Image (tube, rainbow, N blue to C red; front, side):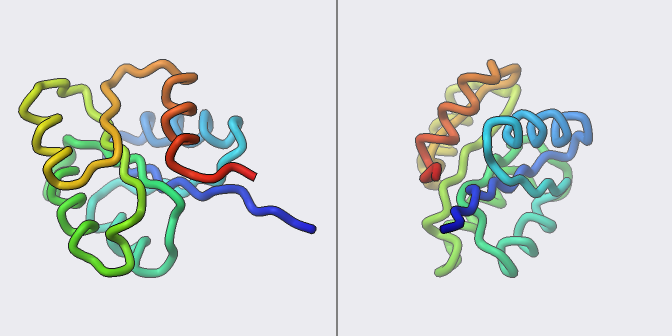
Length: 126
């Protein structure tokens, strides 16, 4: 019997953040795929359904809230757990993210154990 690891899509315009977050999640038993933009995120989910998405809030062109809104509008993507990640811990951002259907909101810098625990809450680990 084979069990597959949950796939987490990491979306962040900063290369170091993508790499560090992906490595952290892989060490915790997840598969990851990392992209640098909202457009790439939407292309990826049109081809493959991740078990969760870690989505940076502050990105050029299309920010995390805009991506989240598009994800929630799609019939095949509306139920994917989305955890918004940002250094911008303002109350308005949290309210906007919740109103659009974010499943969680993580403030940078985050503690690695907190991030792993929050992602595990949203996906089924084998």
